[in-house]
Length: 331
Picture 1 (spheres, one colour):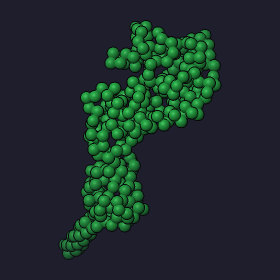
Picture 2: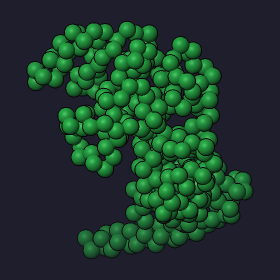
Picture 3: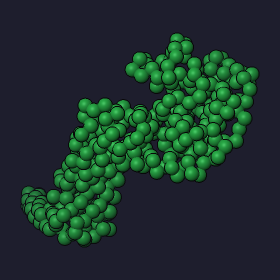
Picture 4: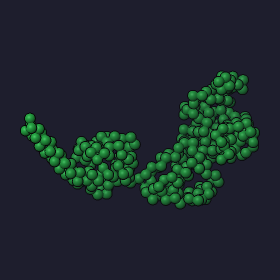
């Protein structure tokens, strides 16, 4: 009985030594680059196996299995960082594992979200470690000058999207790209607009788009939300939209809108003032811009939230009051 156990132990020892030698050779071999520089992108949520297959298909790895084994033995399988990577020279599988788990990316990503204010946008820029913060301590007006914008108010002038940048890039350069992207989107949409919309300029359309962005819970309703506000503009009816009031309150807003807030006049109180507010109130996305310039063909003047993200639209005040009772006051 002792002899078979010794034989088994010897076999396991040989396998361990052989496996260790194989692993050492594989981990430290040189991987020739398919091209120089070699660039690849790892998407968020990708598994170790999918990453290995991707790099194998790109001819960086001779095959995927060994790379998976190496990363698992190193305990790195759950540490892969998404991003754009650039290899300037050949490296080993071990160095490659370290690179993609450390997040040594060639480009970083920042995302500006639809409905964000310019303050939120600047906060996100300030949070990024890889950016040179040239706008730190500057007023919004000073930032606009650096960006090259002619407008006097920064709100709504920047397009919500993902932007990639190299480490050390200036926050001004990112803002310029976002500003120019919004200008392109707005110019194209304005040129293709429904000519019956009651806006005197693309900027007024941008203001309306920002209201639609903040009022819409379901993207499919944007054209109807826009139709309600366009119908009100056409007859001189006040827009009476809470998001503009909230924007006008600024830091005074405590998370709830009160009756006194609706009655206190500000430049953004669309309950006390007719027409559009003086500026956008947030960053609208392309869907809201399109809705503002192509509202639905509807006679609706009112809408009320149903409580599930959608709205009930009404043409008359009597219908609207019944909808309010049904969806809000009866609860």
